[in-house]
Structure formats: structure tokens, C-alpha cells
Amino acid sequence: MTEQYEQRIGSAPNIRWRDSLEAARAEARREDKLVLAYLWHHECGGSATMGESTYPDPEVEDYIERHFAPIRFNTIEQPEMEAALGSGWTPTLIVEDADGTEHRRSQGYLDARRFLGQMALSRLQVSLDHRDFDAASELAEEVLRLTQGDTHREPEALYWSAVVAYKLAGGDREKLIGGWTQLLERFPESEWAERASYIRL
Image (cartoon, rainbow, N blue to C red; front, side):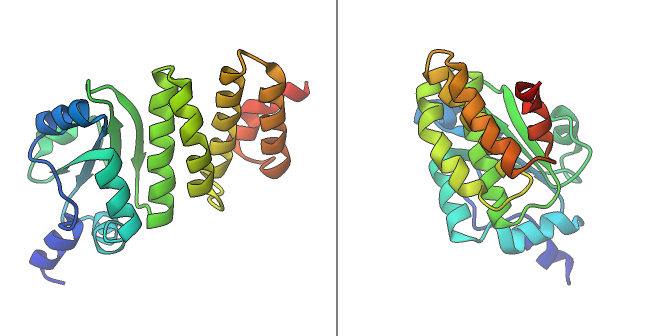
């Protein structure tokens, strides 16, 4: 594989990457989107695989364009951005709001299915962090759909969906217990089940 080919597939040329972090944040503010920062380099196998198979997926491409202002940084050519964003590994995905506050990050290769689940969880996380529970409620069903079958992310989706139901019900603990009971039954060995396990004490 030539260096030119590695550069092409690792950089995911099908995505409409914005020109700068400032431009991405301005667009996010103007169009009610989030910023997706992608740290990669052309010698990284995970970046190459994502560029070859994850980003070209039509659902991934559409989801990014609808909900994010994406910006990429080649960490070999732009090491200052790797330092500024606090990442020592590629590929790294960082989701920020328009003000530059980081809400979620992922490090390592993600296939299209897990990428979509990660991005949906990012949007839900931002809504929860901003205490926008109406928006979180609208996202909860999407998050559960896009994480279905992902044994790493689906338990987290169940956890936060129960939190959303609890918040919308004005702190009705039964909503929380109902959702978390489902989590404990379906994914008893998961980290998220451990976080919810106190309801059985």
C-alpha cells in the first residue's frame, strides 16, 4: 500500500471536513450541531480501516452531516493539536459542544455500527449535561436502536434512558428502577449494571 493510498483512506475524504476548529464551532453554534474532532494519521492502521470502511458507510456519512460539524487533525503533521486535545492515540474521536466543552471521546477503531452508537450516545450525553431532558427524551429511542446488539454500548444506553425517564417524571424513582432492572437482567456483568446495582441493596 502506497503512502498516497494510506493518506487517502485514513483521511476519510468522503466526509466534508471543515477548515478549522473555529469554523466547526461557529457552524455548530449557527446550525445547532456538535463538533466532531477526528485525530488520525496516515501510518495508523485503525485510522486507515475507518477511512476505508467506517466513514464511507452511507448511514455514517449522513449521520455526521446532519448532526456534526466535523474537523480532522493529522497528528503527525499537527502534533500541537494532539497535545491541545489531550490525546496520545489514534484514531480518537472527540465530541464537543459549540462552546468547545468536551462531552465524550472514543479512542481506537470503530466499525460503522459501533461508530453510530457512539455518536448517538454523544448527542444524548450533551443533552443530559445541558439538562435538556426533552431533547434527551427524543434521543433515547434512537440511542437504543443504534446501540442494539453492541454489548459495550447498549448497557450504557439502557442506563441513561432510565435516567431520562426519571428526570422527565420529576424524579419518580420507579422510572429509574424499572429501566435499571431491565439493564441488570439483560447485562448483569456490564460496568453499567454495576453502576445501577445499588437499587437491589
